[in-house]
Image 1 (tube, rainbow, N blue to C red):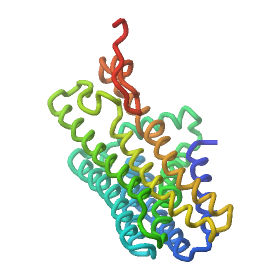
Image 2 (cartoon, rainbow, N blue to C red):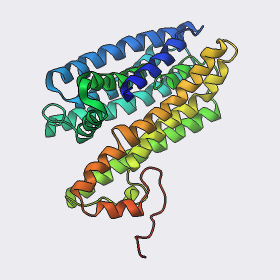
Image 3 (cartoon, helix red, strand yellow):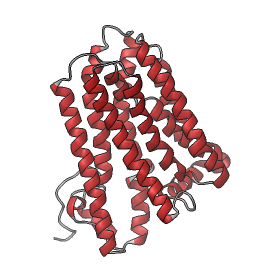
Length: 307
């Protein structure tokens, strides 16, 4: 069974269990968001893929889908106002930053609208190796898996916080602090990379944050979502007495799945692994960079071989 099919099944199972929750507002959020995400991905990613053969339209659909989660939290949530606005703004910032960035890149470079991102060429190559008899169908399942992730695991931390009526806690502040720190680190890493490339075309970026991780931007993006999961813990605990046991556990494990999903995506599917596949072929010095610098989690550089 292909990975996209497995992901679609898992995300659908999480959502299908979550809609047996007792909280009416949570149910409204889940149903409205699911409808919005499916419509968005069909119109912005699936149909363009069928017309052009390019998966890169996902880079428009996914972040604006995240932004829609933020809008839903603010507009439909009925929890404590400061928490709801804060969490909704977090989702909006995550989504709009990446969505506007994708549209800007598409407009300036033609990637998405005219050509494919290399990471999606890599994904297509992997699907062909797994068995390309139904390549188009498997590609569509991987596209929709990202939409179903938005409808389920990625939305759950925010939705649980959106219905929490208790006062904002220190634990939640710590989670938001993790998110904010990671958000700043991600933006800093992207800026450092762009500056390096502008001055050293064809070189291996190993300055600033890139000295401690080969993909500090991906690590920070994972930490962004992990911070949201941390912040959602008190809201999840508060639902223990009001929700059926199985639903409560699925809500918690589903929210934790936001962190796991982002890690899997950012390392193996469209992140570090495909990026390094092409970097090794384009940059002779990249192999040495791999030997001295951690791939994902930051760490101090190691000595080159023989030193």
